[in-house]
Image (cartoon, rainbow, N blue to C red; front, side, top):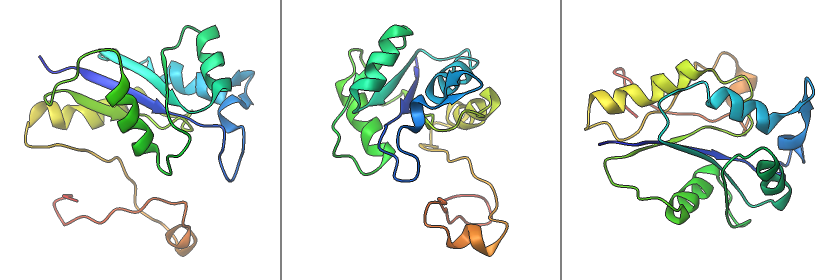
Length: 157
């Protein structure tokens, strides 16, 4: 049976906002908002944080949030996710679906996770889904921190 596994990569060393994961929004650290919103999706078989920071690991421990420590050498969140998946303490098969929930997205909705998971459950040929939105102006287009994707008219990357 296909398992749905969520990984929330999170680190303190943001170049634009150091310490962002533990910054409080409405009295709660951002990473905790992300965790609670992620838990609104009810079909996880496993979900955990992946971090290189002991402050985040210690915070996760106080909240009983599963957390896997990773290297501090990763340049991209997906590298952190890959390492965490390699080092998790449960079996993962090639049939399983791994979802990355960005650790700095406190306004993420559970239906966004469904929109990511469902196409892969419906069609085994689909091996990845990226949620995106149109670029609306030149400033966003030129922003190196704004992720861009290129796709054909059918939406295939």
